[in-house]
Structures are given as structure tokens and as C-alpha cells.
Length: 364
Figure 1 (cartoon, helix red, strand yellow):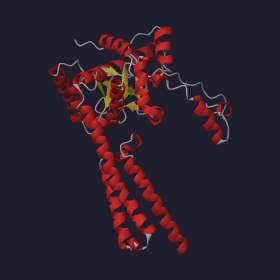
Figure 2 (cartoon, rainbow, N blue to C red):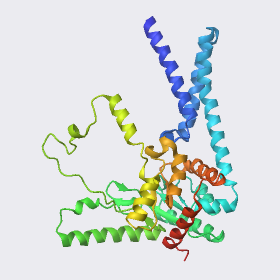
Figure 3 (cartoon, one colour):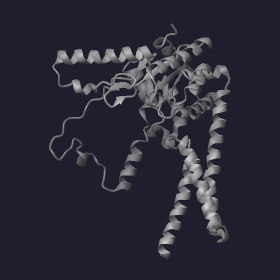
Figure 4 (spheres, rainbow, N blue to C red):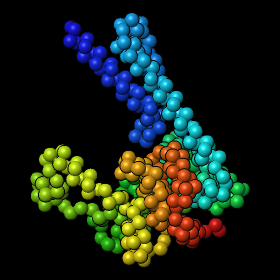
């Protein structure tokens, strides 16, 4: 019985530490599920546990008991601190000088969960586009979404800004973020086995359906289709199309981590000057618009998203996408503002980028 009590006490300590960590990092994208009702639940639970510990006499059990109670008070304080830091960063961005805002804002496309909030960003010129996905349409109709897009475009015109890029990812199959309210089509891969003439006809029909429905909403850019090559079929029944025996580095996790960490230190392609300017621009002679994938993805965000933003712009990337968690825009834009103020952004690269964006997304 005594052992069970000790185990229970250890679990209470561990849970308290986990709660403090979650509260302090509540604004991070991997804890996005804690926002809203999750924050309320976390705060309520921490208060309830602290009260129960006090009522069970832990405050009178010496330093350890008091420390445990204080630990369970910390989540609420950490949450307030994290929220205050977020609001400070947000207000700093919103109050940025208009000239600097419009200079940097043209490079950002953001996802959102609050239309009024993203509308303010668009009206101030802090962004050049929005990314619409399933987060924006739960329970919404096509009519309502169209009205929202139309309203924000009207605000852009009134502010003397170019039309907002309205992006979506409507590929078909499992990636049909706007279906419903739009038509949900099968994946394009379902056409691969058809006769060439039928396949082409069906593919064009898929594209026409997506194009017409998205255009009717006011969407101007669809991030589809996906052109990755499908891996070869499995070579034998035990292979499962992975050849993992030949691919795996080691059966020792430490060795795998050591080698892989060293390998991935030539940085991600989306903010590599050698890849963007050296290969894509100079070697392949591509002078169109280049856009990153979501900067909130772990490969970028968990390393150093501020460094990635500066390197991407200096490498000649034109549009930076902040999709999964649009609230990270405030942190990312703050990074860009700081780099601009400190003279760490390449003016020539930014000038070339502006030219490309004007050519790809003309005002009229």
C-alpha cells in the first residue's frame, strides 16, 4: 500500500512538470490542440489539483509538500506569461511602420483560424496572401467563404494594396481540404490505370472541376497537382517497398542519430542559397516565383525558424508559407523585421523578388 502511494506521488510530480511544460509552450504549433478549450481545461485542472493538495494537508508536510503545491500553481502562471509574450509580439507586428510592413508583407502567405484577425493582417499589408484549408470551413458554406474572401479583397482595394493571393490545396482524394463545401473528387492516382485518351479526358475534367469551383469562391492559387514520383512496386512479398535492410543506417539509435544529425546539417532546400539561387535560378534558369512549404513543419520550425526566414529571403525565395498554425506568423514576421532593421536582408535579392511577384500576380 505504501509503495502504491509513493508511485502515485511520483506520478503527481511528473504530471505537474508536464502541465508546466505544456502551459509555458502553449503557443507552439505542436500544442495547437491546447488552444481555446484546451487552455481552459489545463488551467482548471491545475487549480483543482493544487486545491486538492492543500485540502489533503500537503502544505503542512514541509518543503516537499509545499513545493508540490507550488508546482501545480505554475501552469496557470506559465500560461499567463506565454499569452503575454504572444500578445506583446503580436502588437509589435501590428504597430510596425507601414513602409516596412508593405516591404516585407508581400513575401508571406498565412493560414488562419480567425477571419477577422487575418483580415486585419491583409488590410495592413502585413501579408500578400492567405491559405485556406479545412480549419477555415468547418460548418461553413461556399457562400459564406466566398463572402469572406470578397470582403477582404475589398479592404485591400480600399487600402491601395494589390489583390490578396488566395491559396488552397485541393488535390482530390485525402487532400480535399475544401470538400465539403466543394466537390470531393478521387485522387488523381485513380486515373493511372486508364487508357491514355480516357486518362487525359478524366484528368482535364478533374482540373476543370477544381478550377471552376475554386475560382467561384475567389481562390486564385491551387497548390496542386502533386508531381512526386510514386516508388517502385515491392520487389518481393517481404520487402513492402522499403528495402529497409539496405537503407537503415544502424540498429543502434545513438549511431543513427549521430550520423543523421551530421547529414542533415547542409540545410533544408527551401532556405539554401546554393539550391535556390545556385541550382534553380542559375543552373536551371528558372526565374519564376518560388514558394516554401509550410515553415511550421518540424524540419524548419524546430531547428531555427528565424534563421530559415532570413536565409530563404536572401536566397531568392519569393513567398514564405505559414499554413498549419497561422499564429506563428507573428513570430516569423518579427524575425524578418529584426533582420531588416539590422541590415541582414539582401536588398538586391528582395528587389528581384518584388519584380517576380509583380509579374506573377499583376494588380489588374
